[in-house]
Length: 235
Image (cartoon, rainbow, N blue to C red):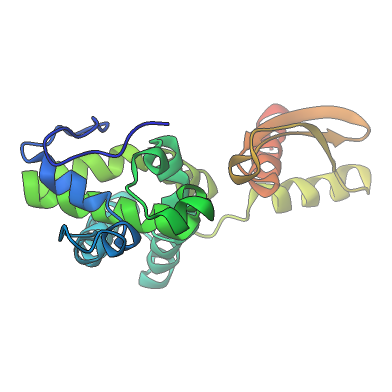
């Protein structure tokens, strides 16, 4: 397990190097750690978490508005809500191994706090704020879009062109017209820990393999398989 950082020696993070490591140490300090050390007052990460929530919202909103110029406000809001959700942030934090860097109290350690979605998501927001305070908005933008690139990729994969049906629906309609039957989705492989599963799915059309897809959910893998099949059949 990676030791939690001190103000003088902080672990390195992807996409950013701190000028003031104390900000990172504060971002990775949970209040349970402070509460158990009454004689040595320290700052915990709740204030940074508050600021990081606002910085994250601005960065993701700006990124989506520039990327999807045709989408309505409602569609953009739905995309943003998914990206800044607790589960998405926790997923990004796990890829950074952020849980191993947290400074926790004994109670949180015993209750496996390093794996809790809520603690991981809050810590990532706090780190985003620490980067913002240490390096400014552009530095926090580079860091945030970098560590969340997998979540952004998933959002882009799910985002259909306005007016276009999702891939599974399109393939289903094509199969019904051509063969009067539905495509069949078969799970090929499921791997990874419970909190970060990876799925590989094959779609069969008229009892023949027509395409395969991968994703972090069965739904995503099926969509990618349907997309592959549509490309193969030229539909």
